[in-house]
Amino acid sequence: MLSETKLSLLQQLVQNASHDEIIWTKGYLAGFLDKNSGGIQIPINTTPEKVAVKPLIIYGTETGNSKKVASQLLATFKKNKIQAKAVDVFQFDNSKLEKETLVLFVMSTQGEGEFPQNAVQFYDYLKTTDLDLKNVSYAVLGLGDSSYPLFCNAGVLLDAVLTEKGAKRLLPLVKADVDFAPDVLVWEKELQAAFANQATSASVSTVKTSTSLHKKNYTGVITNKIILNDRGSNKETYHIEIASDDEISYEPGDALGIVPKNKVEDVAFIIDYFKVDTNLEIAIKEEKKTIEKWLLERNIKGLSKRSLEQLATILGVSIDFEKVDLIDVLQLFPKPTTLKIEEVIEILLPIAPRLYSISSSAEAHDGEVHLTVNLNKFAVNNVFKTGLASQFLADYPENASIDFYIHKNQNFRLPNEDTDVIMIGPGTGIAPFRSFIAHRDATGAEGKNWLFFGEQHFVLDFYYQTEIQEWITTGVLTRLDTAFSRDQEKKIYVQDRIREKASEFNAWLENGASLYICGQKNPMSLDVENAILDVLIQERNITKEQAQEVLENLETAGKYQKDVY
Image 1 (cartoon, rainbow, N blue to C red):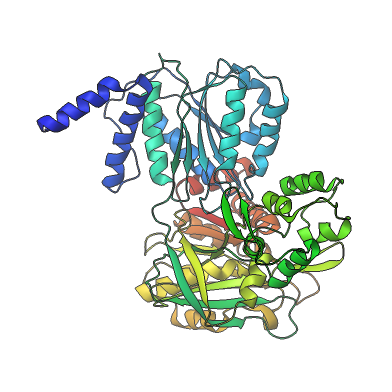
Image 2 (image 1 turned 90 degrees about the horizontal axis):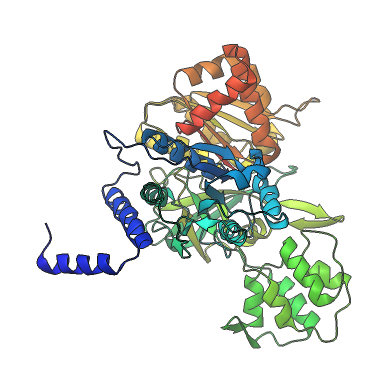
């Protein structure tokens, strides 16, 4: 099968490799073969041998990706006669960790390198408790987005504290990017190889980083920008169209990523505060830029807890509030005479990308990508503020070039063309469903489509009303249920409409419809899910626990997908 030269090279490689390196190579080659054959599922041996290990899979997630990975691991292990169990980190009894022998962690990273909310308590327990984990072998798969400065930071922190407490690393920490399915496949192979060779107790210390090969950067121009709300609305929601000379490759369900910049006037205030030259070049961690460029690209809005703690230290003050802007802090406290602007810039994180669900279809809107962006407005200490990214886009001039990238979302995809879909998208949550319906219209998909949409006022806030009416007329949109909360004394929301249509809603699900939710996570998506549970309980005469199991099974099968933020 191999030439003499290749065989000689292989023999040299094997002879000089350690035991752990051979295990890793075995998994890597298996995964490589699977990836290049186009599949993401692990081939199962017809007569798998039972492996004498019982791994515990602990996952931490906010969007559900880690849970999906844990479920896939569990299914694969069981098919290969590996006795495993999976648990949400929030539901895990922390005191029992010392009694475990083999633990696999799947940990997502949120925001500025933070743990998912359900994993914060677990990490704090590990850091502050005098644990002895010398009998524990572990492996960590971190999920993240390499566009963010602290890529997979939660996985990095978890891996470090486990080692600190004496646990033995079974495999290197894996840092997986947004297109993580191939990395999960390779990790499964490596784990099974390691399970079969549990005789070794050597600790592995390397880190594997796998970044997506499917993230492409584009430069385009904003060709059209309009406000979708009518005069008198409490909302300011923009429909934005972007065109590029390059062919923009995306699918319904994908998002567009931008890295916004700070306002020039905010940067000017900080520069004036420190009385320095705008064009003065300074070096931060061996990178040299002008002060103005540094401040345009560093996060000065809604500072993280970490940044505020560091800022308090260099200012010599106590800062007992969170998520305020750098300018707010500088105005509140007197400037130390020795404080330099370099010290402040160094503690500021680079501005992280912002993702917006794409509201167009490549099939229907040739050469364009559309966004539906609500200008985020809020008050801090009675001071009116707006979101950095949404204000950046609202102010962006038409016909000016803008840099962006496409964020692939394999966990929010249309089903087969003949499958019915239920789409629940109040507010800007309608964005991906405009893409879904336009795509199904352009491709002639035969599946039925049911849309739930809600906002404050019918007259002022019915986004894409003309298009939606046309889709109803042509039959592409089979059903539409709207909820305009402020048009009557008692507020009505999409979850109320779901309960009103309980019989039909359940019938669609029983007939195989796929279910989608997009929009605000809190409280919208939680309220909607509770309404769906109520429908299942009522229509199927089952318990709440059974209804939750129905939703979990739909989610595992890819028939219940959420894009919430």
